[in-house]
Length: 426
View 1 (cartoon, rainbow, N blue to C red):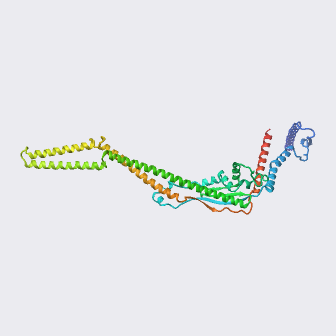
View 2 (view 1 turned 90 degrees about the vertical axis):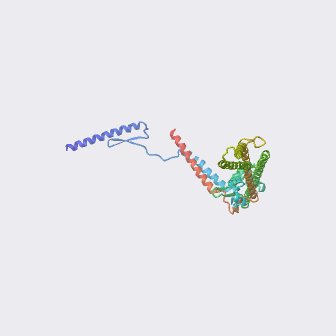
View 3 (view 1 turned 45 degrees about the horizontal axis):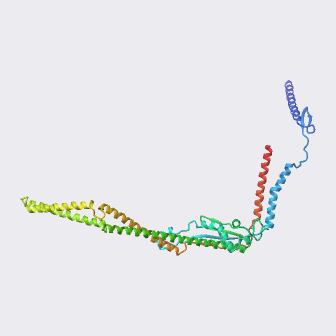
């Protein structure tokens, strides 16, 4: 019994301590509130802080600002774009075409023999040139001379200012509008170029697409003509240069022969070597005869021995003179020895052989250029003729309205988040 009484006394003390702490906290909080907002309720000896019941929710000024900004930044652009696309924007018809640039693959006889066609022609990168030409101001000027682009695209001006151009637009302004009306697509791997042209009516779209193909083909033909003219001109220049070099080399060789009075120094050297070999053979025979005579004659003063000895001495002297003439003695009219003479002849002969090879190569290149000039190496192939549209696919009203709504909504949401983040920090 005593233990139970003690336990109840401890619990009562703990309850009183909690009540006192709650009352202190409630009175501290009450210091910052008004009497109308806070009431105190005594329950079981404890003080409880009671807030008044919340009233009905009302729109704050920030809520109205957010709603108005949504109307201005989202609803107004979407409604404007929708109304413009539905009631103001004029229909556009699209004509599609497909073209590519091909190169002549048949090899001529000169290409098969010499393989020089790569130096006188070629169509690498022509499809890239065509792709840029279709988007250039030049083709706009050329088409405008045949089909008045200003008159056609200014029919709905100023009723549809977004998809029309003013009648007195300059060529630069017309070129910028032209880039909006065409959609070229080029695949570098296959070399195929797909083209889409938009116009006010189906027949005009097909006509403009046909004119683009015609002007592109004319541009390819001009490239062919320029390439042929350049190859022929370069081949002629190379041939004239090679011919002049060959003439100079042959004239230098003729002057050398006239000056030295030697047609071929190598043949002349071979002749002199033949004389020297003959003298050496005679010397060997005279020595043999002298040895045989010494075995049969006892008198060293025999006239025959003296005669053979004189013959041997004369032959040896002649051999020495020939060798000296070959190495040092002047053999031409301008004090030139044989080593220098042979060096000059070898240099002239190398120049002449090189000039002859260059001349033959220039002749081959000339034949190849002439062969390529007689045929068209590049041509424009149309694998999709310009189509005649039956329905207006542009402008894409639903897609443009939807994209406007998406971007406007994203812009409004980002702006609202930025505004509230800055407001909370402030």
